[in-house]
Every structure is written in C-alpha cells, then in structure tokens.
Image (cartoon, rainbow, N blue to C red; front, side, top):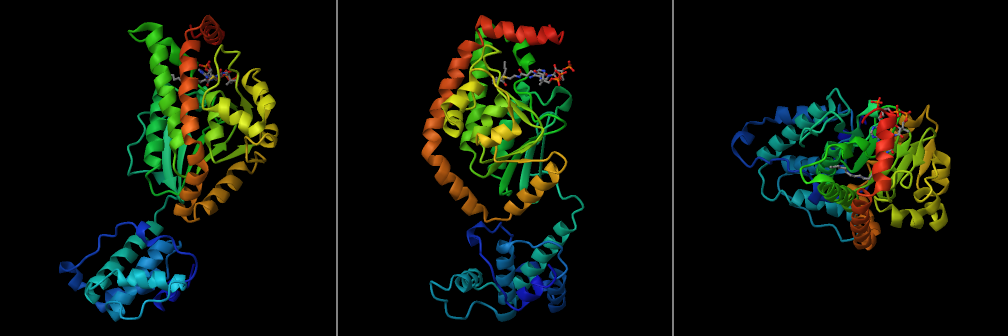
Length: 393
Ligand SMILES: CCCCCCCCCCC/C=C/C(=O)SCCNC(=O)CCNC(=O)[C@H](O)C(C)(C)COP(=O)(O)OP(=O)(O)OC[C@H]1O[C@@H](n2cnc3c(N)ncnc32)[C@H](O)[C@@H]1OP(=O)(O)O
C-alpha cells in the first residue's frame, strides 16, 4: 500500500469507483473548531496517510481526494469533464459537491478522516463483534464483522449446532441486521465438527398452554419467518459448510448464493424418517438445482450426499480439502468482499427478484404442510424414538 497516499496527494485517481452516494456520513465540519487546524496538522495528515496499512477503498479515497483539492485549491474551479471521461468526472463531482466549504474546514475534515482511518487500521483484531447491532440472546449464535464480511456462526458444538427455538429467532435478527450493515458479504457457518444437525428435536418437547396444535401453529409461523429472511436477503449470502449438515440446514442451502464445503461435509435430509416433509423451499429449489429424480432421492428417501456428490448435483459450489478449507475459503471471501457492493446487490436482485414471489408461496405451503405433519403419529413417534435413544424422555 505504500505510495497510494502519495498518489492521492498528487490528485491521483485510478480504478473503478463505487457510487459516491454510498460514502458513509463523515460528519463534515463547516466552521467553528475547523478554523483551528493548522497547515502543519494538514501536512502531517498527508504524510500519515502514506503509513496506512490497509487500502481504505475507493469511496474513502474519493472523499480524501475532494477534501485535499478543496483544502489546497478552494472550491472546484475547473470545467466539468465530459460524460465519457468517467473517472475524472467522478472526481470532479466529489470536489464540486463540497461547494463553498472553506479551505480551513476542508483541512479539518481531511485531518479528522485520516485520523479515523489510522485508528481503525491499528485495530488489533481483524474480526470484531458487530458493535452496531444487538447481539444474539444466547452464546449459541455468534455474530462478528471484519474484512468486509459479517459472519453468523452457529455455536453449539456439543449438540452439533442443532437449532433451538431461540437460535431461529437470533438468526432472523442477525440476518435482518446484516442486510443493513456495511459488510458486502454475509456468511453462515458452524463451530466444531458439524455445520448443523438441523432442528433441535427437543424443541418439540415443551408444550405450550394451547397444546400440540398451538405448538404446531407457532412452529409453522417461526419456520415461515425464518425461511423468508433467506429468501429476502439482499446481498451475497455464502454458506461455509464446515462439516456434516442435516435437515433444515441443508434445505436452506438452495437459497444461498454460494456454498463452500469441506470434503468432510455430508448433506442429509431424513424427513420421511422423521415423519416430516421438506422445508426451506427445497421442494422447489432442489428439483430445480439437481433435477427431479435426484431431489426425490434426497427429499423422499433421505439419501445422504457426500460433499463431492452435492457439488456434482449443483447444491455445493466448491469442495475444499478439510486441511486447507478455512484458509482457502476465507481468503477467497475476503477478496470477493472488495468487489463493488452495489453491483453485487443489484446482480443478486436481478437473479432473485424473478423468483421471489414463487419462493414465498412455496415457503408458505411447506410450512402449512409441516404444521399438519408435526401433529401426525409418524412424526411424534420418530421424534420420541430419537429422544428415547438418547434418554431424553
Ligand atoms: C414450539 C416452537 C418450536 C420451534 C421449532 C421451529 C420449527 C422449525 C423446524 C423446521 C423443520 C426442520 C427439520 C429438520 O431439521 S429435520 C432434521 C432434524 N435433525 C435430526 O434428525 C438429527 C438428529 N441427530 C442425529 O441424528 C445425530 O445426533 C447426529 C447424526 C447429528 C450426530 O450423531 P453423533 O453420534 O455424532 O453425535 P450425538 O448423537 O451423540 O450428538 C451429540 C449431542 O448432540 C445432540 N443432538 C444432535 N443433533 C440433535 C438434534 N437435531 N436435536 C437435538 N439434539 C441433538 C445429541 O442428542 C447429543 O446430545 P447428548 O450429548 O446430550 O446426548
């Protein structure tokens, strides 16, 4: 990165620019304390910028460019470049947008911005808890942000990351927060040796006052809301499948944009064994992804796929050797997270919008069918059998 600031100081700009409208609010000064910034402070900030360890990204560089020009030359006083001179026009727009901001205020804003960037580039932890959002209610879900990626981690390794009722609620909240945060990419992954063993079968053991009917009704509502969040998620959503996946943690993969899996992962949907039926829109996405007969073998007969098989069927994007899985996948995601976020969002929107209405209808129908299934003898017996095997009843 050494030298990028030098180019800035010489009014550089190269490369593709993100929309200046996406520049975060920088709290521009327009007077008052701004007058106190000396030329020396400004020169120091110009030098300090050269020491930044990380490229601050095109949006911030554009802001710095505009402030530098305003601080050294005053309000924009050069003719607007032609429409096709895209880069110079974008630079001109950024400078011109500062209007009549005084040189002193521009100096102050430049110094403030550089000091903010220096402070964050010295941050000791590359991945920090996402401070701007409400953290999940329990430790079973951990949400962190860093390197342009928000990671939602299932964190119940002793129970193979089985999803409790609270975790469904926490994942919904985490996805809603991630859809609005600064990270261009969101990841779902698991702690320990499993990605997720699906619905926690003990969820069905504490009956509410309304009895089994009420339990089935409220579970269907929760399931529908949970899956809706995946259908509507507006930015790239990646599953980092760190181990075996069961049930709903497999079916929702059809709603992800990209699925990376370790070669240790397996994909199992034992719905018939449990007296249940498919969810997560898999009754629609799986036949579409892998063809109707391969989908039927998984969803009707509970055929467990290896990672390689799931990749060949199109459910998984790429399989990595377990020994290098984490390193390779995170390096790749880190690189992808530097792509222009608006372009990624818009591309996802184009792909997803055509399908959204259909996916919502499928989700509603699957949830209704399951509501009935949960009250069936087949389902109750299968759950009782799992729980008694484990002496949980
Ligand atoms: C009223 C509101 C309710 C809200 C509910 C919302 C409704 C949404 C539901 C959507 C429909 C979802 C469907 C599915 O996901 S179906 C799939 C369900 N999952 C399973 O059937 C997997 C069951 N588990 C297993 O088969 C095995 O545990 C597994 C193969 C995953 C691992 O076997 P292994 O021998 O390696 O390990 P253990 O069995 O010893 O497991 C370690 C401990 O973890 C507990 N465990 C694992 N998975 C689950 C689970 N899904 N539910 C509950 N508990 C689980 C296991 O019991 C062990 O616990 P202990 O150490 O205490 O014995």
